[in-house]
Image (cartoon, rainbow, N blue to C red; front, top):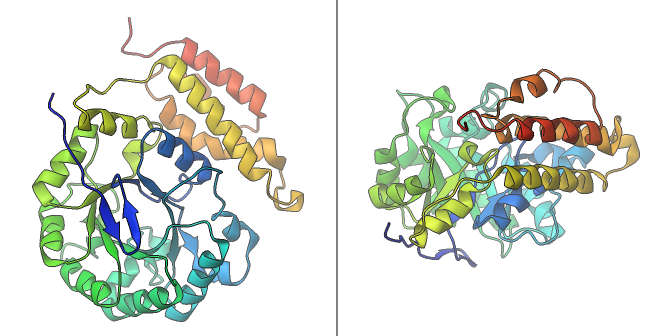
Length: 345
């Protein structure tokens, strides 16, 4: 296998040496998971989407979405909302933390409760507002670069990404990430890499592609077919932070290698430890169930992905809705891992 190369990308004042990012995913990409992916070779990450209204109102849970783990690098804070002034005020609060390398504007979340009130992907139905948000956030961000993550359109009859990205570029966006589906289909169906290629050809700022990457080789195929400057990976990395190691291996001409059972066990145990470390920063009154039980609840969605394909996972899955402490949960995880993978004889 011959090696592939990705070139460093300049995003405003930031130089991204390895332009392969972990995409922001609500309920998943907190500091614990981001840091694990970064250690496996990811070039950068983005927080879960943070409500600009919640941040400006000093909502404790919203503020904790900006928590980072020591050693994280090239991490952006993603803000969502539809009021330009509030988004700008939230951007100022992000800058004040001193923890982030850039600010990302969410103009692509397809969840109905977000898009139907004009936030996230709902901004694509109002290109002028999307551009104005970008303009005001850019003014508030100071030296921090501002990026925009969006989709190719609202639905099949409204694929307007060339218009919306032209607007945010003119408003000062330093880079754009395009998910190659319309908002209506959310995460299902084919990904329009051809439309991503059109955006890349039309824009002067760096363009990152998102969607349709399942294995390491797909990263380089996307770059070759669309010309994008970098790639952002979401759901395929869940339960598989080693995907970023695989991408580095392919780039170096090495065959990707599946994680061993012990690799999976070590990753899950470390993931739990980091979740507990993050939660330990919160006030006791903000954690009704305490650090240990809350960490177990947060890890559940990840466990479904880490352990899919193991013979005994079904038995564990039936207990995930139960309240159980970390010692009990990790003991059950170890039992599942001891059962071996279904493909193993």
